[in-house]
Amino acid sequence: MDFENIMKRIAPPSNRPVRVKPMNQSAIVIRLTLLSLVILTIIGFFTYDDTDVGMLEGITATFTNFKVMFTEPHFNHFTFMEGLYQVLVTISLALLTTVIGAVISLMLGLLAAKNLSTPKISNSIKNFVAVVRAVPTVLWVLIFAIAAGLGSVAAVIGMTFHSVGYLIKAYSESFEELDDGVIEVLKASGANWWQIVWQAVIPSSMTYIISWTFLRFEINFSVAVAMGAAAGAGGIGYDLFMASSFYLDLRELGTITFYILVFAILLEIVAIRIKRHINIT
Amino acid sequence: MALLELFNLSKRYDQHTIALSDINISVNKGEFIAVIGPSGAGKSTLLRCINRMIEPTNGEVTFDGVDLLHVKRKELRRLRTKIGMIFQHYHLVNRLTVIENVLHGRLGYKSSVVGALGIYTKKEKEQAIQLLRMLGLADQMYKRSDKLSGGQKQRVGIARALIQDPKMLLCDEPIASLDPNASKIIMDYLQKISQSLGITVIVNLHQVDVALQYSDRIIGVSQGQIVYDGTPTDITQEQIHQIYGSDFDDLMVEMNKEKHYAG
Ligand SMILES: Nc1ncnc2c1ncn2[C@@H]1O[C@H](COP(=O)(O)OP(=O)(O)O)[C@@H](O)[C@H]1O
Ligand SMILES: [Mg+2]
Image (cartoon, rainbow over the protein chains, first blue to last red):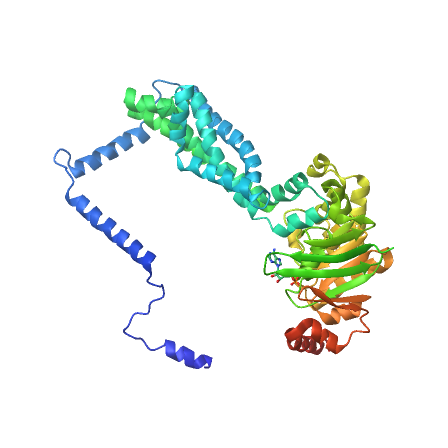
């Protein structure tokens, strides 16, 4: 059939819908799930118990609080320099756990990569790490707190633990992306495992290693804030906890939020800079 | 004495796939050998059994007077430095520069730490530069290797193999991804290397015309067996037909097409 004929066939509109996606079992399950979620949401709206709180009042009160927080921040229980110091404590916690985690993960990531290891070792590390990742960071910190007591030690161990789980997966997957032929060529020329790793695998994965590590650092920063509040790990998170549930000081809460916001933005800028730099070279 | 001898070499991957059976070849220093045969005949397996990148199931491999199949890891590593390998897809480390990729050919001579840190002697660096000049890549030396064309990448692959100071080059379809022009350049270099440096070259090819044009000796492989071993001038149409089996007609069409473009 020539091209013109095909085009003509497409042209006339028909009443029957033409299905592009196959209607199989998984598609049906997904649709049913979505449908039941919609129904539950609608039922939810109708069954709200809002006798004590007016919807409108609630929303306005929340906005008033936001307004107080962000337009009238003040220093009450700590000075500007003390606040800065506390943020640095939080950042240090994030940095420490990321660096220790990255070093451990680099080594174990090599052993977890299928192309650099034996199937047995690779699979056992990957399975173990999947379990580690399945449990949230905060929970790991609390688990380690049983032995170390609530505080910075448990936070460091727990956060490192989860970082390792995360980074091993990220690193080993980027190692596995290396062209198998490169490993074959170097092996055939007499190079050994360590030489192949440092001369071919790591240079090829450097971009990934850096961006995954930085991403984990950002995650660890927010986790470190939460750890200060929930696990007594100190830093700005602790001030956040005190201001919100002890002093009930909305304005100071605003100050702390600004601190965290400024540093989060700074981290983001640095991350973008680094990524741009490694993409060029 | 022969540089390389294969005696009753066999490779069986699993119950059903016998990739090589009873291969006997004796290769002299400086020979330029083309291994031809249809896809799946066992050409790649043959090359890799020579340096034990694939462990043969049976038989003997003697290289430079040493029984390769019974040496320890360390000795195997030393012997592998004397055998360069070149592949269809070049396999360079993309993020590194051309000269860094060439220097990788020296890793086999170094201790783990010195090699891992990428420390090379002045002499090695000078040699890399000379090789790149010889292969017409003097201007590309400090470029990232993924910025090169296919033909240039293959020349980097050749430089990386030559800096090993090899006695033999094993080339697995080195021109299969290249256009006719770049293919000719690569084949000319391989020929020059064999003739002027006395390095033995064994090259897998699926282009019969190229094999006939360049080699001193043709080895025809079909279904894991050697069905022809002799000079390119003695080979007959029937023998080529026998090597390629039913693929033969496609092959002739392809060759005629190429001639048509060339003319
Ligand atoms: N790793 C492997 N596992 C199982 N069978 C293989 C493997 N590699 C190659 N083979 C089989 O061995 C035979 C020879 O393959 P190969 O040496 O790659 O041939 P060629 O290079 O001539 O195309 C083919 O039938 C192929 O399917
Ligand atoms: Mg092949």
